[in-house]
Every structure is written in structure tokens, then in C-alpha cells.
Image (cartoon, rainbow, N blue to C red; front, side, top):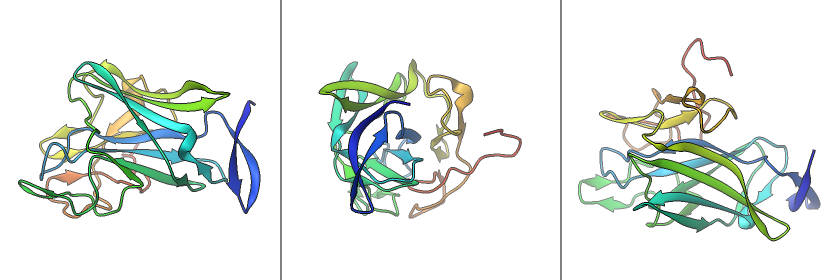
Length: 196
């Protein structure tokens, strides 16, 4: 086990395992309000809170890699939501379907519908190291636009393998469940017969 990076837990300084946080859900298609109503979710499966200032994500935008430096805390056994916009944001065709506040938002976030690849980096000894990756640079593995459905990861399986994902059939923490299926900041609900 590789131990790196200090984090806070019960007011004590502890160390986090290198590959603890991972990308658990991707809403690349947007919502019935706007195709820009995009977000992605990270999950912390450990029993400690992790400071996100040593993490960043990247995604392909106009065929170039765009980076977002994260901040704040991802609590133990909890989620961290990165969105294009805040809850209640007004798009031309309605408000954001997010029914929960993101932990981080930036209008820079733009997830590709045709060459999806998202990377999660951690600063390890002043070197930004890829600790997770989702997508293979081609079409998203799952999810959709009619209706709008997120791409959910099945456990912590290989993020470059289509078999590691499913299309969401559940609506949770969204404002409107008509034509919108995703579970931001909530446990992914898996379809029957999927082994985790």
C-alpha cells in the first residue's frame, strides 16, 4: 500500500491511500433544460475525509485537455459533485435539473459527447499523477439524450472499459425527473444481475 498526502480525520492529521477517490458518475449529455447542464461525481470510499486541494480533473474540450483545480473536502464514504453551473442556474430553456448544490462548479466544464475522456489527478510529491480515468476518447460508454441519462460506474472497475458502466434508470437529487435520470451525490442504483 502506498501512503501519501495528509488529510484531516477527527481533527487529527492522517494519510490517504493514493487511489482512494475515483470518478463514479458522469452526466455528459446535460439535461432537458440544456445540454450544458453537465456534471460529474467523485466518490471517496475510505473512512477518512480528504482535502481536495491536491486533486484536479481534466477533460477534452475542442480536442485539447482542459484542467480544473479542485478545492474543499470530500467526506468519508461520500460524494464530491463537479458541475458546469450552480443549483438553480437559469438556462434559456429552464433551470438546471440539479436539485443539490455542487461542491465545485465552473462554466468551463464541458464534457464531450463524441470523444469522452476524463482524468483525475493527484499531486504526489509535486508531480501531478493520474489516479483515475474514464472513457477511451471515443463515444461515452453509456448514458443518453432521449431521455437524458447519466453514465454510472459499477464499483471501481476499469474506467476505460465499457463493461464498467451502465446507463442510469433512476432519478435522485434532481429537480425534475421527467426525461432526466441520474443520481448526483447519491449512491448509484444498479440494474438487476449486475455483479459489483
